[in-house]
Amino acid sequence: LKAKIVEIEEREAKLNKSVAEVEDQLAVRRKEVEHELEQKKAGVQKECAEKEESIVKREKDIAEKEERDGTLAEREIKAKQKEDQVAEREQHVETTKKDVEERERKMA
Image (cartoon, rainbow, N blue to C red; front, side):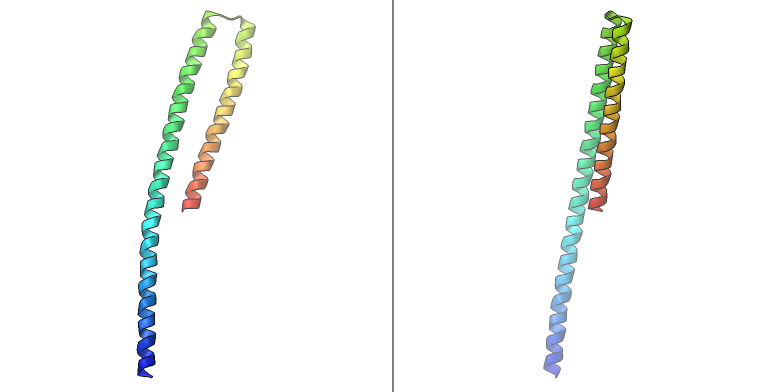
């Protein structure tokens, strides 16, 4: 009976050790995933900022060109197109934000 108890205690100790190792591995992996997520998030934010800068520059260039040439009707058409582009960009930004939030939720 004592031998059986010792055997059970040894198995329990091995299982506890295995559980501890798995928990340590999980903690390490969790930190790795959190770090990867932060890097991806920073990358997406940087990309959004760069695209926004590009958009602002493009809009400025367009505005300067419109001042140089184009009739009132052409300007109205271009303004409508620009509004559509802004709406598309806003939708893209929202989609990107939702994607990031979804990734964060999945990683949590």
